[in-house]
Image: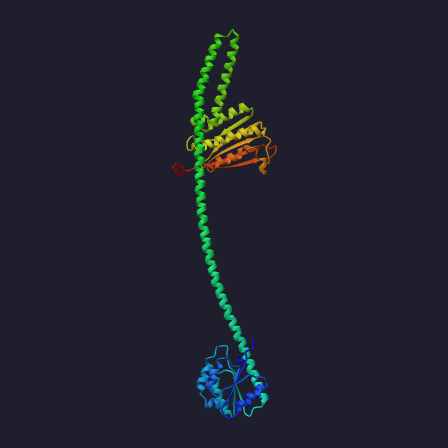
Length: 416
């Protein structure tokens, strides 16, 4: 705490005789800062600029306007208790009367009976000023506390403002994120709808081309074969007959190939006879073509209640899985199982081929992916299905497919 001479001043009020000047000179020689006041009124005007202690005679209280002085002392801040040293002529009754008069307004009062030894006065002033110094220290602590409280309030206000700003920012970002998520959801739904339409259009185009191949070109090849057979009967003995026979065999083989391509594009059995018979025909044709035994098992599969979209997807997945088995697995036997429960359709394709490590993604694919996993995932995603692959080197592979069966109200919602 910086030293302030005004705050350490000793006010001397001794209106009778030369006591004030004598004490001032004595105290000045001992290093005290003094201020002589002619009256209590003057003292009240001076003490607001700083005071360390008061030395006053009992005559000052009796002759002056003590009420204003006591009122000024009573108005001190809580930390302040100005020390009063009152010089009295003695007498127990007189001292008690002075204490009663002063103590009510000033808590720190010392009575010194005249004549007073210099050392006693000096010691009393030192004690008084030390007490005043501690009061100034308390004042400094209180001021520091007020500053800290003010800074703390400001910090709390700033923190509240920052929290409010942060909350506003979070709410804004959350709203934008929700809007972006909703936009993404709409875009994904639109892409999903577009993918469904593309798949449907693809299947319709396959159906159209397959029927055109079967109905138009198939009939043309049949007519060509009949014509060649008739021509062969008339040219049986000539060299032209062998050529006609070759053309007839070529036409027959072309008709078979045409039928196979038409079936692969869109098997008529899938539309006319249903999924089970279409898969049975597929496995029989595939087994004959690749020389791999196929066991096909279908439990109680309902003819109605399963959408054509789900049946088409299951057929295409089984078709793709069988083709990948033929290309990559080296299997000698394949099992295809089709099951249906109240809420889902299951398809299982299992082979006894060389297998692969299903835990290593790079080993579970060949080119576009063993078993066409990416294509299977995309197709199943359109109907809410999922799949699982189980395999190990030299242990074959199993593909398990699950497709949920939508309830009636969900079907209507999708249709609409």
